[in-house]
Length: 119
Image (cartoon, rainbow, N blue to C red; front, side, top):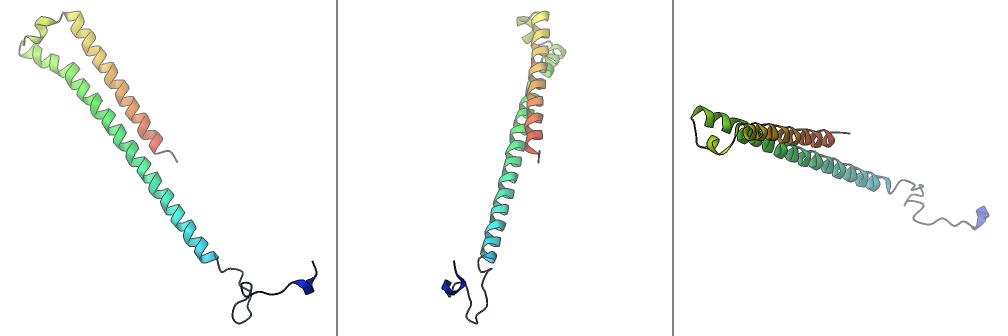
């Protein structure tokens, strides 16, 4: 292409004949800033969701410990009829089972929380 065949257009030059090569830069910069802000908000939402799910698992594990361990202990203390229906081995297995499931729930919640805070 010859230099003589190139005709200047109004888009290339401003009103005073200056070359306009950065007209779109402020607009693109604003779009990039909005995109970065949207990504930051999405990351914060993911973290809050992970925190919520981890707390739910942790509360479930705490409830299971309460039901599986403390309830039989209180029933032993007050000589409740709950123990009349369960043999010693069954009660021990129920307590151990509740503790294991509570530990698994707590570990799952902790894993969810750690995944939510990874960069």
